[in-house]
Every structure is written in structure tokens, then in C-alpha cells.
Length: 279
Ligand code: SF4
Ligand code: SF4
Ligand code: FES
Image 1 (tube, rainbow, N blue to C red):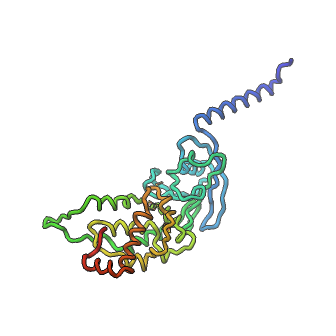
Image 2: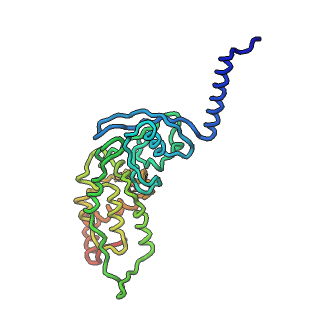
């Protein structure tokens, strides 16, 4: 039996070391992952492939930052808090609207590239950035909070805790616009002129169901804000990172109010006599 050639011994040693290192890296969650990131300007572009090292606990935004730092310095991505609170890092990850900073890589299927692309319901600017300014033009169109006169001479009101609790959920909205992105009325039919989208139905619901508010937004909801275009698919509720029950708790009660006001003469008469109904 002859001793292995020196080069073979060296190569074997390197292979053994690499295998051991790979096993150790895998044990601590360190591995390479492939990404397909949409690159382009004004809606014209393509997916480009990148590979980067990842560790347990990393989120998609971490990987995008690594790619940006080491391989694509000009990659445009919007983010601010990296804590799921500013609503800036919305994108489509493996085809689903999500926050990049709250989507852990270990939640995504291993062994296949992670795709990251911009939201589709809004005009594209560059790479992962879209122009969401339409949303900020919609908001001022909704009638502002209009409180009833104080209940007591000292300027205070009396309200039921259950009425406060009902609108509390709506106030969790971080304006990420993922619900707007997934809604087929905006995403596929581009009816931005006719429909304000689920985010602003939530906003209207927060005002409309506020225990002190006396404004009536039902006519605008029906005629200007397009609530009738919502066919209750619940896709918006599914993607909301704040777990707001958009459809059941905001949109359906608003639709009921619109029907009461505009299609049920008896209820309309009762409302006229009793003032705005709060339940
Ligand atoms: S439930 Fe209505 S608002 Fe929500 S995604 Fe479906 S159609 Fe759009
Ligand atoms: S309702 Fe939910 S999904 Fe829609 S903008 Fe607010 S936080 Fe985002
Ligand atoms: S960076 Fe703020 S929500 Fe993701």
C-alpha cells in the first residue's frame, strides 16, 4: 500500500474541512440562499439572480440589504423602522404581499429562490420602490372626525367601553398598503378613481363607528368611494400585518349602513328621527 500523493492528501484535507464547515454552518443556521430580485425603472425590468449568506433569524430585508451592500449598490428599496411599524418596506415576496422586515427567511421554502418584487397596485418607480402617493390623496377626501357637543357642562362626554373597544382595532393600521396591493379592484382592474380600497374603508369605519362622531359618510361611501365594488373576498384581511379584521369588522358593517341608509326606507326614517345610529 502506498501513501497518498501529497496533493491528494491536501485536497482530501480541504474537502474534509469544507464538509465539516458546511455541516457546522448548517447546524447554526448559516447557509447560502438564492434570491430573484426585480430590477428596473418605471415598470420596465426583469428579475435578477443573487446569492447571499444567511443566518437563522434573518428577514428578507436583511438579505436585501446584504445584496445591496455587496453586489448591487444601486438597488432601490424603501424601509425605515425594520420593526413592522412604519409600513415602508411593503413588497411581494414569493408572490404574496408582505413586509420585508417581518418576513423571516426560515418561513419561506428552502431549496428554491426567494422572489422579491415591488407592489403591483401602484405606479412603479425603481426596483422595489413604488409610488404610493395616490393613497395620501385619497385620505383627505374622507369626512373628518366630527364630535357631538359635550354631554356635560364641564365639556366631557360619556361613552361605553365596548364602543371604544370596537374602533380600537382599526387604529392599529400602519399604512403599509398591502391590503390595497392585494385587492383585485385596484390591482387587476385599476379602479383607483372609483374605489378607495380596503385601507380607507378601515379609516372610514374608524370614524363612522367612533362613539362621539356624528358625521354621516354613507353617501360618499356609496357614490364616491365605491364600497359596492368590494365583493368580500377577504384577501385584504389575509395580508394585513396588523391582523385587522378588515372585511368582517370594517367593510361589512359599512356596507350594512349604506344599505340601511339608501335602500331601506324604514331604517332611513328611524335614523332621521333618532339621529345617526352608532350600533
Ligand atoms: S374584501 Fe373587498 S376590499 Fe378586501 S380585497 Fe376583497 S374586494 Fe378588496
Ligand atoms: S389595514 Fe392592514 S394591510 Fe391595510 S394598510 Fe393598514 S396595516 Fe396595512
Ligand atoms: S421597515 Fe418599517 S415596516 Fe418594514
